[in-house]
Amino acid sequence: MSKLCIVGIGPGSKDYLTQIAIKTVENSDFVIGSQRALDLFENASQKIVFNVKNLEEFLYKSVDLVNEGFNVSLLSTGDPGFSGLLKPILRIAKEKNLDEKAIEVFPGISSLQLASAKTHIPWDEANIMTFHGRDDQSAILDIIENNSDTRESINSKSSIILPSKSVKDFAKFLIDSGVDENRKITVCERLSYLNEKIVDTTLKDILNSNFSYMCILVIY
Ligand SMILES: C[S@@+](CC[C@H](N)C(=O)[O-])C[C@H]1O[C@@H](n2cnc3c(N)ncnc32)[C@H](O)[C@@H]1O
Image (cartoon, rainbow, N blue to C red; front, side):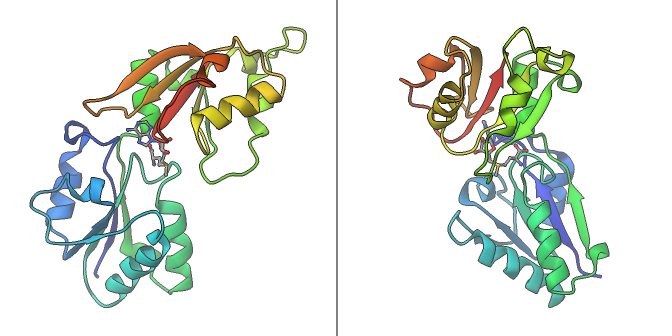
């Protein structure tokens, strides 16, 4: 049976690639991913590049190629199961009648895991949330409620957040929603890359900052 392997590539640096990710990619007929992901694999066979705009089209293509009898590796940043490509592929596979047994998932180190490691927060003790692709960010407010009169045990935990939109917009949303502008935050930007930045700051200082989209936020 030909396989669609959804391969987690980790946060971005080659150092965080698993051996099984490398082997799986080398044994595939096609490897589909962003340019940044494909660059990690020197010995990959036929490479197909997607970008944010045509991602959906290439997810369909990966399923079509497996239905045609090819082994395909689809590269997903971090871990495919956390705001990654597993969810959309399950939907498309169903639509295209690809047997779910043909799908194999290879976990990668999530950017959230690396953020928890860098900030020394055990992630089983943190609130973990993703706002990737979500317009409604209000769910964060219950989690990080900072009024001591209403603080419940869950709210004393740190929160490790994959933000939607820019870090600046996220900070603005929190301040506009009444969160203390002096609330302590760590921004983990471009984790694992040579230009990685881990900045201890506050909500209000984020408003005057210029972080890229590639950030994890830790809210204390
Ligand atoms: C589509 S989500 C993918 C998340 C991925 N599945 C994971 O487990 O890390 C992309 C978002 O993940 C975060 N991200 C991915 N790689 C990162 C890195 N190296 N450093 C910081 N944040 C990263 C950023 O918030 C980025 O906008």
